[in-house]
Image 1 (cartoon, rainbow, N blue to C red):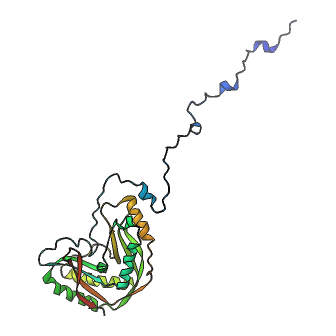
Image 2: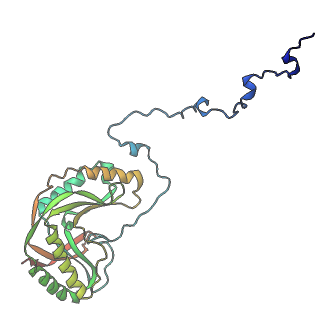
Image 3: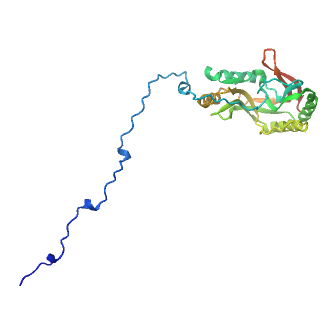
Length: 276
């Protein structure tokens, strides 16, 4: 009797290598294995400590002219004033010693940066409360009476010198100014009384929020980008030694601005009104 092996009737199963069960390898190249791009050749440039790096490398692509809006009495002094009108503004006078320090701040700039700013003359530095612009001469008596009422209803107070700042920012400086601190609430009340009295006379109300400051300079047209940033950096770190100094406020004044014989801006005080 023949004995058969049970395995003879079973189909032969061929073994399949594990590699055949696996999916085909991804043909997408691995980014990590890609060769790194060669760095762009940059010619060697010796370091000069007296030149800002932005000045040495920045080249403007095109000229972009910016015309700043009117912010206070110093702007557009060289415009022609219509006949029988005066350019008027109301301000608080500052001590001469303080004005001289503000002039020294401008001189602390590097020569290239100094030329990019239109610096305010010492006689033109005031704490402006209201800019009236071109005003008929026959309105001056009414303006004086209105200011006298605002001054008499406000007692004397004091403010302090703050820190340097820029409008709209240090990165894009268009106006370089010195801020104030101290009894700012009293200062805002005084400015509000001046504003309200003049609005009652028919003058336009200022649509901007009153931000007390002393304008020291404005960047010239076309100074933008990194060239302007350099000005902001220098102004932020300008050596203002009078920060915290107390300035008594005892009067307000009505000023007229006009052009002198050599077309320079001149200022005439038309009235000085004591507080309290």
